[in-house]
Length: 459
Image (cartoon, rainbow, N blue to C red):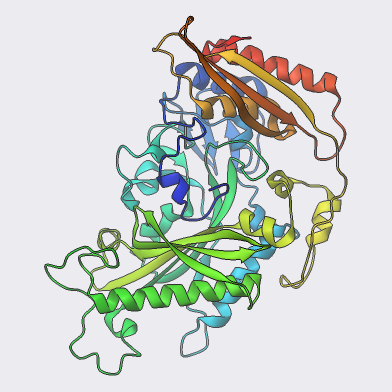
């Protein structure tokens, strides 16, 4: 997958094709971030976050840092910006279109919407909320410091809006959408950014609600005892309940996809895996001649509902990424643009009707500056080199001037018994032309910090 869905299959299946692998956060990189916090942001505040050398303050709550802390100042500065609530931002238009679909098509007998919406929940969650409450295995790759942003050993910035699922269900909700910013350490290119926005949807059904359109449901039950888990059902669910849930889920989400992309859109369902749903699917649509993953979904694991105190209901859930949809629907070429404050960009999406057809018109195209960095990896096995740590270093120094980073060459020298990597770093300013001199200064700092933190030998 090259972008972020709500339920992200790529995040739950370790993909080592690009050399990205889980590793413990090195002491050096953690100390670097904390020193950067102290030197760059001491005494500076934003409405949502304050960064200090030994603590992180988010939404008025102070969290002590520890050995697991790996949040950089640039990433934490995004907390509280809430692009999905910013009128004139394309993400706001997409979320409004999604809201309108659910408000219009799912109402109770009085004509009121059955789905409630939560779009301002703090992104700070416990590790238990982000992982354990969703049945993510203890040794799963997504828990690695190379994959997620940790405030400390107890708290993190949510990696998905699903982190709030159990708690909202426990509060008594049975149909809701959660919209918010999520945070993941990832590659650097035009479709990836450490902060993006998701919509999580959940709907639960009682036995009467699920079987309401079944002519004779007298002998039917949503549960079965001593059942077996099968590819198309959970062990606790009857086959009738599993099929009705699947029908409701797919009918709802197919309607959403057609609402967003057009009634004549070609679509297909693909079997998938997520720890928190079974069975699970991804919905793909044919867009501009290519199949595009739109969302992930599935039947909520009954264990999750039981942990939320639900004993007599079953349900489904889905998740989708707003940036991915907006980039396709509006032809936005670079994910960094969503963070732009340029009026030439935002004015194109300042419309009263979210269904207004819009095609992004580039405000200008500035040239790239390309520099390569080659280095020998540490010879000592005690010093593990983690690709995501290097990406984070580049992102922290270069910020949004860095458009893309990718590995262009790697080899192992048989005589030296050492491995070498060569990365291409593409720099481009969104609002003016960068000079090569400016880029060289940034690039040199990246080289120096890479040598110091990762003990690489620049070639």
